[in-house]
Amino acid sequence: MITTFSQDVRSGNFVAAINGIRALIERFPASLLALAFRIAVATVFWKSGLTKIASWDATIALFDMEYMLPILPPALGAYLATTVELGCSTLLAFGLATRFAAAALLGMTLVIQLLVYPENWPDHLLWGSILVYLVTRGAGAFSLDHLIGRRLFGDNL
Image (cartoon, rainbow, N blue to C red):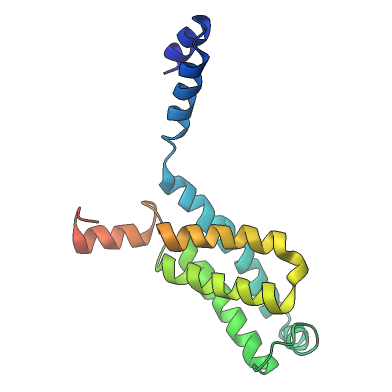
């Protein structure tokens, strides 16, 4: 591929050279991308969950005075948020029930965006984009989902 590229450039065929580069880039494994996405977004929510359990009284106070979610009592909101952050982050890291975990975190991201911190939309857009990718494309080959699927369904995934 490199030799073909250099030959194309020397011969002045830049379109063929660009097409060759594009073809090479498109061979990047989507499963590596999914793995990177899973780890990246899991890390964000895992750290947030650990912060919540590090000072539970402060967490309850945040839910009471700053987050002020409608309908949910602050303590219940804190328990739910912490459970979702830690549980779904763990699932994403291992690639287990990935679509479910990503959908739950996507829902949480939407709540944060719409009800708590609308000014943080660039972060939420980034997390949401990654989570939508995982919901729609799955965990990839480097995941427990893939191993379980192969075990249950063989090569007919």
